[in-house]
Length: 160
Image (cartoon, rainbow, N blue to C red; front, side, top):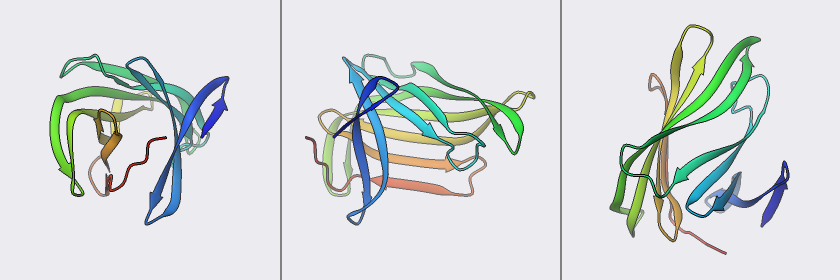
């Protein structure tokens, strides 16, 4: 399904665990540019974000970088500037994930950064793998320093 947020139409991607809905992600595509709506407080910020950010430019080469600026928020009442530094780690990779073989994978690293006025601090890192014709097939996120890691592998994909 589609949803309109801030005057922009997004596709709704529902995340399920063992058939039970756990989350929804809103994405859109414009040519080879892929965007995600960063919406919510992510469990640490005092206020929700509402920012459209470029998550993938499929034309970029390995090691290319860009930044998603989420803006100013607060954590426990303290002001913080938040951004996500993005980097293409690999292009045209192949992998077998949960028994499914994929080619033409683009691997992207996202470093989640907060600045409380004392310099940038990476508080989480994420690696996503996007396979042509399928979308997101692998996702691994951990806090920094690493105390918790979440790893998601696509086991069944439905594209409508």
